[in-house]
Length: 475
Figure (cartoon, rainbow, N blue to C red):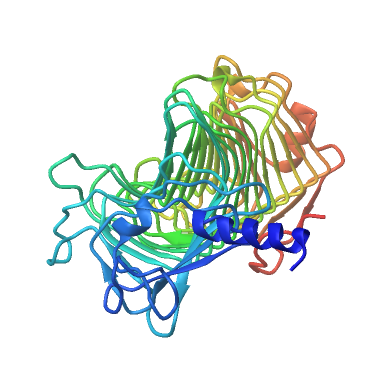
């Protein structure tokens, strides 16, 4: 053996003895067949999550839990992956997903608060697991670290009311102290939140989360919201399904540069989708709500629109289908936030099932652009468009829309909403006489044109066939 080959062999043996590796390794864990004294191989798996938590993994490593097995422990990894080389926690074998449970033996009796504690690690993927009987399914928290690139996907997460630590629970909980969470992905999971009482969520981002994606998930009813995003930025909430929540399916507040697109939501006690300022009227902006299907919002009879923008600026509600809301289909009140919002290409039908209101209702808005919407009849026989006005109201523009009303109630524009109001190039459909309310006086279409100078290039037609084509396409 020559000297070069001898030295290479010695280096290789030393590396093996020190546990170093040139490539990614796969480790196996089985509660029913493993032992912690094993090497973590397929034929000799580890047994406990505690053994996994003690291990130090390298970027690209994979840890697989045996399907059909159960662990009554909290997964708390101690290693981060690297850019392009995540550490992956998943499943192997056949059968149901491996279970990580927060209870000792009795389902619903909480002993451990957290199923998976990310422990400030970055570049980690959690997938194909069943996390149940916990207060927080996946806990993402950063005290000071910059935590990046964490994904949970294809998991089942069931949360319960915490005992005895309070009432808050969430399938995914994310927040920071002085650190940051970025690149968080919640994809293709099935969430079963605790369904009774406030402070129970499916996904709850409290603060400090950026560049996130919440997509393709299914949510059972939550006591509060299926998805709440608070004090976060640059995110995507898309193609999720949910409903029957104590408040809303999607709640975005004090956040900016967020897209809410392609979600299917139904039968919420408050709004189906709400975007609003809470801690400040300047923190919520550049939010796009588009191509969502919203049904039966506001069934609790309070805060009762399908989609609502409240204290929001420079945001868009576009291409949504909204029907069967207890009150308005779309409600906007930007007050002192600065306005500049757009309501366009939406299809609204049969809203106002519980009270007389507008299909599109505006309250204290400024520079709001309403165009290319299709508004069908209100169940309450309320007005197709209602502008109530307020101290900041100015510059409402209503153009190129189709408004349909069986009893002729088309516009209700309060005196406080008339400053800078412009309506034109609309098509109106009604079987009876058109009714436009300008201040306190109701008038016909011709009188509306003559007395207000509005809709001079609009047309009044016989009622079009009642159809519901869903949200308009956005190109």
